[in-house]
Image (cartoon, rainbow over the protein chains, first blue to last red):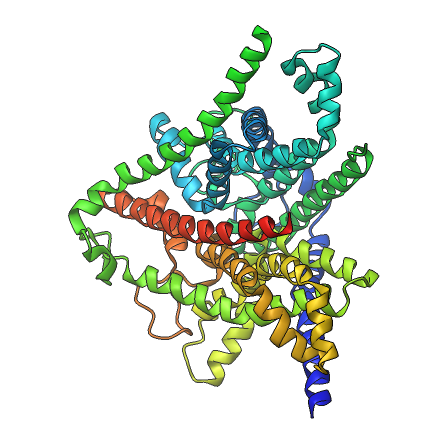
Length: 275
Length: 290
């Protein structure tokens, strides 16, 4: 009886654990099956056609996603690094502990709330939707990720390295800038890539900031389309062609996200901290 | 020496920034939801009428919708996330396929939520529609249940990633003591591992709850977006996050916008509390580890 119970439980655990993989395989399978059929040169190089017509592409959304990520990085990386270095410097003090919690809280804010914030701070002031308000929203999600990974990476640098530099008469600030930061570049880069792969799929903060745009837009003050937003719009549309394109967008998005994680693993291996 | 001072000052900006940011977010949300708070006071939580035309706003249907989807998805996901963590931390701790398995589960966390929505819309919705037809219910496909099913998959990696770490932390001598008393592996898991790791497992579940409460896109795409109070889980509904996503850009009246922002404030505060508790518990564990 006891052995039977033990076997039964083990079987159940293995069964449930493996069953968890089923949705993953199903999602990947469906994206490839439905996505491949719409992907061709036109899909990458042309703008969406009006509903009902076949053909057309998602060039505006691909460019839009890249621009949104670029400007979000421009805002988030310097401030995220600064916050991360602050957390590192004060890691043994009460204030450092409190601010780490603050960063955790910021990271936990639901993305739709981030969208509201960016709307109230930027869109409302400007009077219209814009690329930069979307990038700002994404940067708020990005910032805590960079801050935390920077702190964790800097913490791994052994203290004797810092002491050796100080013993040579080099000032503390130069030690941090020329010794500690360069030797933790791998971890910091990996945090940045993690953040990028996270924000590249974010949709909720873009709904009322970047908004969407059927035309190609390079102006940061105008609304812009993005891949995740297009997936949302196209999935819920009644047009067959658009629904097919949603799968195509999903395939491109998944490839971008996996490519970034791949780069991440590569960087981590190449610049692993070892002393 | 002035270089070091300059460095300290610049670094302090980073600290001020994060405090200022969080405070500014809270104040902005509060000020902008004030018209709605002043107008509806506590009725906002108890009224089930949401009518933008007559400017009557009660959030009960969305609060119920959020609680239902989060609760159901938690109940569904817990057996799976516990199984995943037992699989990689207890049964096959050092096996090479455990590493692959962990990577695959991590992939589940990396899929953007809008893709879960896309998949849920074309894959889970027809399944739910078939169930509805069997029970002679309106075959909407999109419903509270559909959203809960999609959510439950999304939150598995959040609970399991914490649970597997704390299960690994269970000291071997405790487990061996259990075995030497003649306990089976199942009994050791139930009587030794679970009691030892329970607060960590709980923290992981809280984290996944925080995720489920705030999840927007996947839910919006499969929940049906009805502003009526759902009578059962097979009916379409709305969550706090999905009503914001649906109506925010269309809100014209000041009270309408303000009510939506108040919903955002509620969501912000609930997730804040849940994440804080989860973080406190996790911190206690890292303290023991050192």
